[in-house]
Length: 183
Image 1 (cartoon, rainbow, N blue to C red):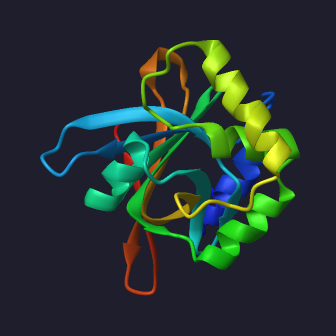
Image 2: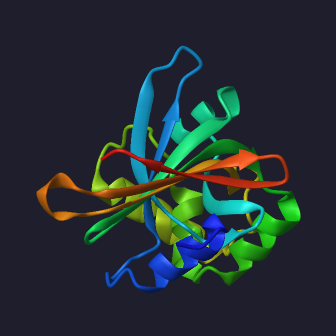
């Protein structure tokens, strides 16, 4: 294992062997501690953290605004990576730059979705997306990116007879303290 958790993550990510290695579970909680979890897509991972994009007005966006702490889980065959940390919104310029890279239909879908709100029908959603696609909208102010800055990482690898390998990295001074955990 590398002494640098980001380097170790990069190795395991490259070896994931799944169709969508960037799929990650994002766990958030309300200010009073009610948890929720859903799948989102990793768009960038670097020294600053893990980046994903969403509607700020949806449940996850509201929960992150009220309680800016979250956890991520990557699950690949025989391996898991958990990451915990604080979350902040990306600057508008970064969200604008990512928005511009999205295919037109994807931008229209993000623009048209009133994330987490009840829909009358699938047809209503498709109509909204078709209308938005004709508009070719700029990134709306209610949609953009978040970055989770890791404070704790855990790498778990399956072992026979429940003898799994678990290594935790915790911030310590200017670097990372690595600890082996019992399975």
